[in-house]
Amino acid sequence: MDSANQPQTSVEPQGGELVRRHALATRLWHWTNAISILVMLMSGLMILNAHPRLYWGHYGSEHDSAWLVLAALEDTAFPGWMTIPSHYSLADARLWHFAFAWLLVLAFAGYLVWGLLRGHIARRLHITRAEWSPRHILDDIVEHAKLRFPTGAEALNYNVLQKLAYGGVLFVLLPAMILTGLAMSPALDSAWPWLVDLFGGRQTARSIHFIAAMGLVLFFLVHMVMVVLAGPINEVRSMLTGWYRLPKDKEAGQ
Image 1 (cartoon, rainbow, N blue to C red):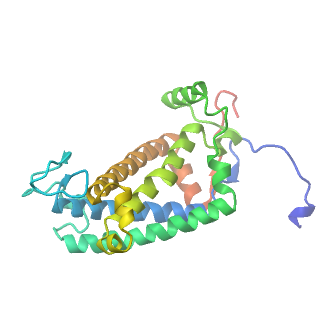
Image 2: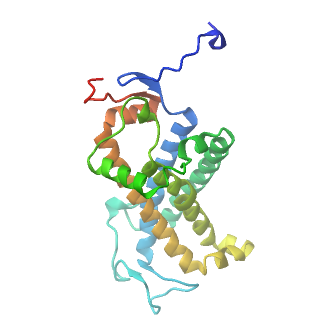
Image 3: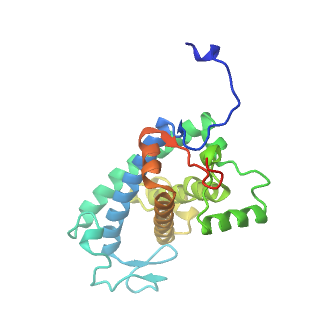
């Protein structure tokens, strides 16, 4: 039967029902992003092993004052099990890093275009005036602290903390990672010198790149904790197949 001829209903799905949650584009972006960030992080740690210090400004060397010293210059800051490759190779690490950086850029651009044109990002991440109120944000923090998660059809909507977290990743951390990465490229330094100046120097871009990466790591850790607490099988299935079983309201016996 043609869906246009089917009777329309305003009844919301109930707890326990299996519903469509994530579009294919969202799922493809999620896993491409996860794999790309993981490879870039591990290869980035190997690159950082070559000079485990961070500076502000245009220049940074062993004679300059670093704002962060991860290890002595003759030591290794990160062990092999955390890096790609596992043995020391700055050249190989850069190849891995740049290859997956371009994969991330292309996937990110594609997802943004799709999400903005289809209105997906606006629908999922728009924060209403009521949600911006300090009381509403505090209530959401308290509910998370008490491990009280939405049930029924309400579980399909992001709360304000999720919107802030996902919005921060999409519009702050990932753009900062991409732009600072471009600013550190010698070839692009010559073609677009204004990009380096935008960040106040190549070493500042390197520091911001590292800070943004640590922000993504923090997001990942919190995200994984929430997935486990909310029900990992249901959450992972929804991101693999798109289908999600709405949580039941235990108090209401739903």
